[in-house]
Image 1: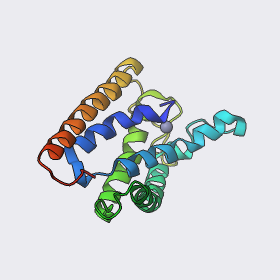
Image 2: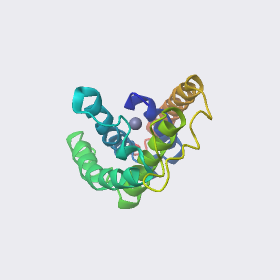
Image 3: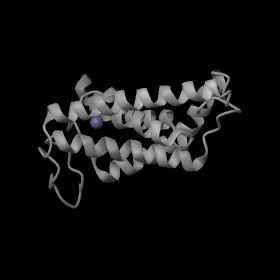
Length: 168
Ligand SMILES: [Zn+2]
């Protein structure tokens, strides 16, 4: 996908459904890390637009980096927001969120980008390419984002009314 924000749609829905068992920060961090390589290529760095970062091996490595760095960066961000002690990011949450982030990213991109080689270096097969049109994929990301945001805001509002601690 050309821009990371589209990948956040499914992330918002995961967050609404999983609430404290999912970190939107770690998931979003994984999206950013996944698209650094294409960004460098577009900036004139040369190479394949969706190269090694957009393979299952690359997504696994980037997911791992997102888990470790995202847990600590996310906790730093939460501490700066004054939520650090109320919302620690558990390792299980970081692992789930980082891997969901990197794998959902590469799978969505494999549906639409002809240069995504999921199984590199074993195969250059592209079994997902063209299964869904670009328009439907954007619609899916937009709708999951809207539904997720609505559900998440509803949960936050309900918790606030019930005087429960903030949702992390
Ligand atoms: Zn991408």
